[in-house]
Amino acid sequence: MSDATEFHVDADLCTECGDCIKAMPKYFRKVEDEELAEVYSTELVDGDLPKLEKVMSECPGHAILWRK
Ligand code: SF4
Image 1 (cartoon, rainbow, N blue to C red):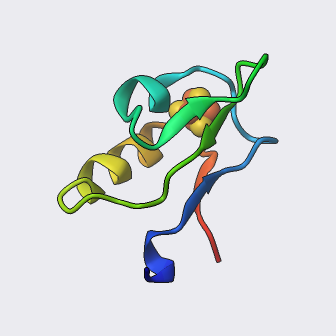
Image 2 (image 1 turned 180 degrees about the horizontal axis):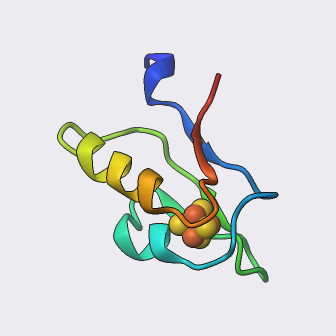
């Protein structure tokens, strides 16, 4: 697994809108008992990258980031 496919939600930036969860429930879910989103799978399926990049660019908090 290459580092290029590692991504995460920065909890300080997430506005809890839920858009990423609605768009890509394969990768994002709600933190238990909170509205905050988290990434629970970074095993990016072939072909999902463009959609992920769209979700990243449309995230109101710019909270979905590649892991450095
Ligand atoms: S789209 Fe961004 S702001 Fe909205 S829940 Fe997901 S990470 Fe949080």
